Length: 369
Image 1 (cartoon, helix red, strand yellow):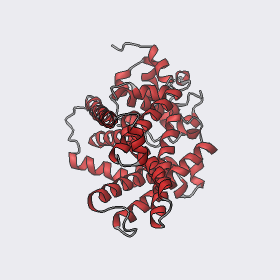
Image 2 (cartoon, one colour):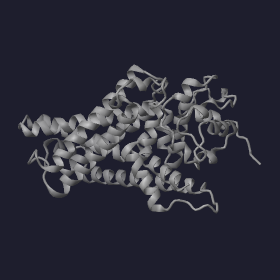
Image 3 (cartoon, helix red, strand yellow):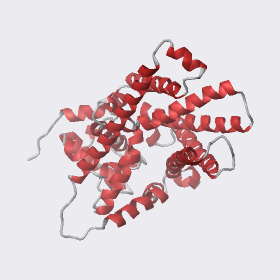
Image 4 (cartoon, rainbow, N blue to C red):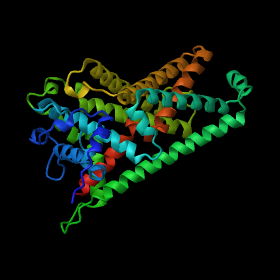
């Protein structure tokens, strides 16, 4: 027996859903979606579950993360129920539910609190970085007001707190999805095959590219390097490339010594990819060429802006170090770059960035059948 929870619809609307309850179950959204199939049926079923208040069914569903928000369903909905925006709101709700502290819920449902929480973390991270170089003039001044041990301990506590929240969110998501695994006699793909399927999708975005194949699609008239799938691809691989380059620099060589060092070349290429992707993504949100970009949340802007600034300040540092530019100003830029880069990682569980983990996990369960 299904127990109806009418209050759930109001809760979902706080995460950016509009009049999804205007849906009269015609099925146009599911019929027009290029990604829906027998084992991945959406978004119609989610609208029904949202109206009925079936929260657990939504949280346990891998299909929630298989949508790439192309906007075709929203553009063709006869009731203007905006199913694409509704799916995005459900993903925000799921991220907030998986994360245990409640910070994600505050950041997704309140723009002022999102800004306050982000700035709070930024200030604490800035203070903590000064403890790593206590001989710095600004650091010595700061420690006359707030003791070194207090700042350092607060920094360690923040890292521990966010690390635990990230781990909890990941395990919670896996637990929810594993509850919905179908037990049948049919032989399912093994672990290796499922992992290879996920890797193939992340490498090529094959499923995402099907969103742009309709003849009447706005993106069919655009070059491949302007399409949303490629923009998303450059942001993802640009960030991962920068992360790998940073790790390699930390492990093997001082990053300020040789511009031709392989990790520096990797970082430059990855940085260009990320800057290209984030710039185009923000441009589309300004221009609003399709329904997908008409209702951008602050969380989307926050994520893209931080990525862009991290890339820009990284290039500024590389150029200034190469040409031995003003050192004091470079220290300020380096502080901004480091704080933003660290904050992106620390707020992983509390932001849209969490889908970088949740989507691959959902794809894994999808490939397992």
